[in-house]
Image 1 (tube, rainbow, N blue to C red):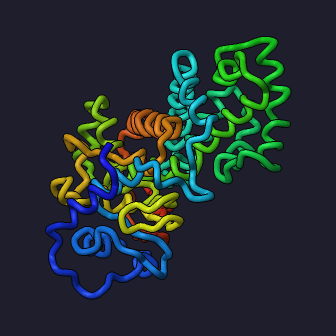
Image 2 (cartoon, helix red, strand yellow):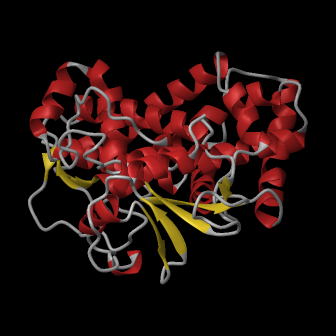
Image 3 (tube, rainbow, N blue to C red):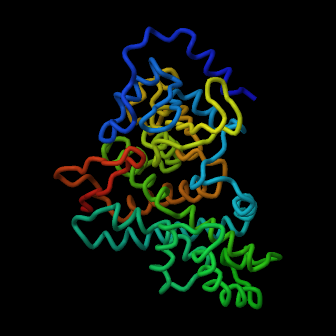
Length: 365
């Protein structure tokens, strides 16, 4: 396996003379891209003292850092616990069919609601709710509990504590019924040969996958296509190309621009115990890896996304996000033949980490 130290030594050998020290990430909230270019060119590995982390910005270096076992998730960052691995194995066969059918149904219900209006906000009325609607339908949960599930998807559930206990209490009568009378929903599949505690962990992991990061990625995807109506029309005629368009959106506009890691032992110049910021937003626009990297091209041959744009090593979130993107777009195009950007000012991102649109006003006819 290519190690981070080797990559950094190789890539920095021909770096041009450096200008004065780079500004901190803390100064680049509204427009980080000039700083990203400066970092990639002159400071591929640098300690940002105000931010308190070592910055890694080139594509190859970020990819190596995310795969390096000496760099582990910091507290609060998603890891790859056993529940993630169990869920990855469970989401196959009938379970995957149930999840896919739920995404498709949820997307068409939400899209049809928008069809009766002339203008809508896709973020608030589609992107924020589609992952939740998918989880509710796939698990076969009561429809009237959608709002509570949406709250769990947004806030997440830790491995212990009140949130997980509340979820366990909520699921207990539902899992008992599924064990007695299994059906074709995902909860029935998860209940097979698994304890209630394990099922609660699997459902909690799925709720995390349906959280804010997936909604933000979907919003950026739709915004990119609405900003390129010619490419959107090609996808209307050739929906089989949607997967590539989705990967390209993750490259150009990942839902998270940085992922934090902690060094458990020295990694080149990085000391043990140090925090490392893997700049996904910079890596995805590295001109050494991508031609014309700032341009969105739904048909780019090799968009090379980095771990669903979050750096995660598990597949459940990536799977759910891809399904919501593909079926969500198809449902919108089917229900809204005149779909296009609405006129008016666009909101500028105010958070370095989260760069997706907060509002996405569209005309439906």
